[in-house]
Length: 194
Ligand SMILES: CC(C)(COP(=O)(O)OP(=O)(O)OC[C@H]1O[C@@H](n2cnc3c(N)ncnc32)[C@H](O)[C@@H]1OP(=O)(O)O)[C@@H](O)C(=O)NCCC(=O)NCCS
Image (cartoon, rainbow, N blue to C red; front, side):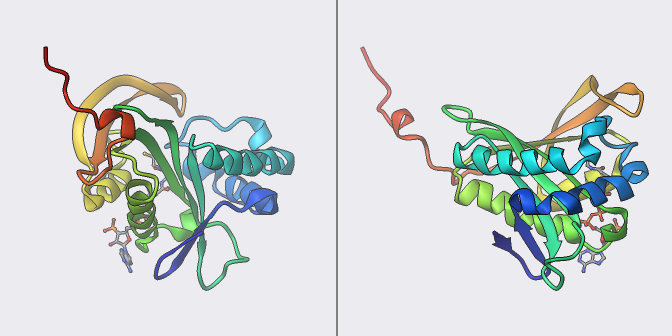
């Protein structure tokens, strides 16, 4: 569990399933323009019981860190949002991919910036990653603003990148890097000279 001034970021396990169904049911229209289409299964408790259990296993195995955001003042209340760090690649890359969303009711209060400030620091300082990649559609100004506030830098532009809301959408590619990331042991060898 990670804690900031107003938020709790947790992997709730199967116990969070009902609230995840509520989140996606209540925010289906709010999220549809910005996220890939949701399969019908995402609106069932069984899906989230499996997914949240899988999240714990993925975290233990170093494959992903998927966090659910709650208000510290209401830990048993509704889910405010999700911060998903996935596709962990190690070795000489040490990078992962970030995705996130907030419920409509939780927007405009600085929650995502607060959640990502905390969780990106964890991914860098505790999990030892060197790079976090995050991409947004050019017209997703709210997402762009979140990433800019956190220091993510624009690195490129991918055409027809992800299928969202009925079409393949261009994305702006951004990343945040951590100059303090420790090198994996096997990379700490001297450069071989002949
Ligand atoms: C992208 C998304 C997470 C951004 O949410 P957001 O609420 O704009 O971002 P934050 O939570 O960081 O809040 C920032 C806003 O809160 C305001 N705010 C209010 N109180 C605040 C406080 N105490 N501290 C900081 N900011 C505060 C800020 O001024 C800012 O508003 P502004 O953009 O009008 O200036 C949200 O719009 C979303 O989930 N969209 C749908 C899914 C999506 O697009 N996901 C990303 C795909 S790339």
